[in-house]
Amino acid sequence: MVNNKDFIQRLEKILKEYELSASTFADKIQVGRATISHILSGRNKPSLDFVMKIVQTFSQVDLYWLLEGKGTFPKTEEHSTFTPTTNSIKQYPNSTKETSEDKDATTTIANSLYHHESSKKIKRIIIFMEDGTFESYETS
Image (tube, rainbow, N blue to C red; front, side):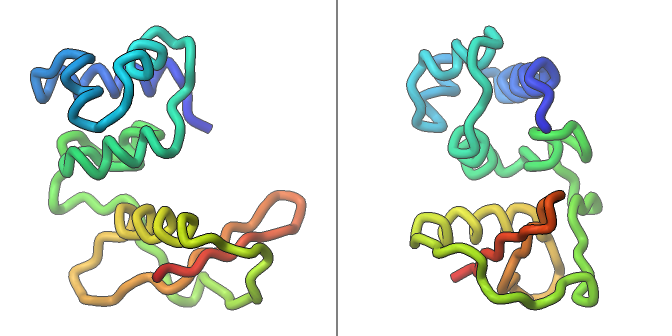
């Protein structure tokens, strides 16, 4: 789970690195200025949409670094935050019905997490819950 205080510190580091005010940053990632203010003050937690807008707008921001503080900022080419093995993923039928919006978000997240030299693309991501259930997402 994302620690809000640590997330705020990382967000402030991004603002400082790019020499942006909170208002300018909000405009760049296309969110309301109040959204940034509420997150920086600790009033609100960041949404997935907010986080993804940052990662998509600023290519040097690593998703895992932003969420968990793991990795580096700015990103380095040598640093890889996620390296799945093909043997670690088992195939199961989909457990939920997906919308096209879910598929777009899954594809974006998958591409952000998986940096690989080859032209291989992620086909399916399966998330296993503690209670034994799972959700399967297919990229487009």
